[in-house]
Image 1 (tube, protein in one colour):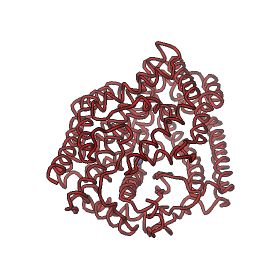
Image 2 (cartoon, helix red, strand yellow):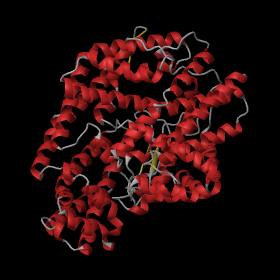
Image 3 (spheres, protein in one colour):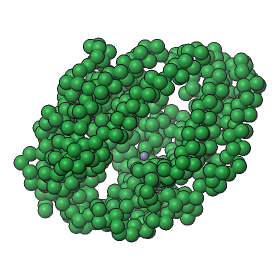
Image 4 (cartoon, protein in one colour):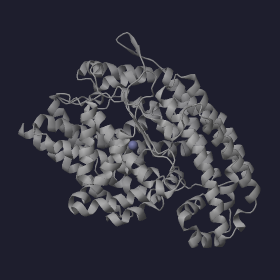
Length: 597
Ligand SMILES: [Zn+2]
């Protein structure tokens, strides 16, 4: 991997042009937009405070449109600051703008909160008639979804106090954890490594390197264990009191509400996935045989399979993705192509650029931007396919407007994962060398496992953690480690030997603290796409136009209603079996290739 970084990727000059948002940090239009949003918020308050619930349908539609316009202005300024900062996090002018817009938009949010609160607290009869009124048809789903929080909202002064105290409470603990993990060092061969550097060594082809990297991570996590145990307990207790004050029946209910899925649908997903843990064991038995090991230890999970590493020049990556997209539907390829020709992508690696990749939807009056760190690995081609999938989805859903373009988390990864599937099946169809095919399949299977089985096993850990904290009080490190090992062993069966050292590896996962309950949404999205891909193969060309309609709908209705025209029934517990059957087929294919070679 080191050698590849010195070779030209062709992405060195691929920088985005943000001028569709603002010309730069000094663009007077930026300051003018912020002032306009402040003035519009003051006017909204003057015109509607105390009156939202009594507006007639036409007047309410106008009020919501004005509210939406303010949200759009606020988002545009904030997104621009974030995008430009992420390309050079060491630039003090970018950092200052980001801080300024963050503080400004939190102030603005405070000024706007009355508007949604008054709508949420409107009497049921009136709210139902407004939701059903044709004058408000365009905002129907937003009006509906906002009302769902009614049973869980407190009074305006209470909400303000909770929001203000959270800064030095919950949010401070999360930040402390982030900084603790960021500053922690792990001793590997006498070197002091960061967490991401030591984690990267778990992918090393040399088993001894992997074993020592795992030991280094364990050692570092153990040193901080009294602190992380305290943070986990504190935040679990904080969540318990929040759920009690807001009258959520279970630890996961608030998350399901924001994901727009019922507790039953999530339960059916968890049941279906845990019911197929046998697939995990089957695959890791196969991996052990391919690697020629007597047993697979926890530090062998990410060992690479023997195959020549592929290298993709930026131009080849672009063609690979666009061709796969074009074979699916010309409109999808046409939208994706604009990202290249109109410079909506930042792909170059630069010092002080943020890591990772994302697609930012920005605002409906502009268009999405894609952010990458392109190094030329096969993985990077998949990431390009993934982020462009988001980009196409975000581009098409702009027609729903600021309040309804966004999808809930559960369907947010649909187009991205589907885009990856298109490229994966294209690359597989072109590859005839069995070893390369096996390595590609293994990558795909391991990625899908990471999003489906690993996330659901982590959901089981969270479930046990929150339940135990509520029933047993403060939990010890040993208790947390026992829960972690138990929920991980349930998934791996006898295919991977999980050492006691591995028991403390719950203590660095940020999602558990930052967004409790988040993890299952990944499994939801990935299984949904595997099922959709199966439907696509069955239905052929008739599938794509209906799929495009789904993308265009954005977040303008319930996920189950938006997906229904594709033949998907999210309320059917058996639905998840379609995606799991697709995974089963991938594992069987890998087994067949391994046997033949
Ligand atoms: Zn994504």
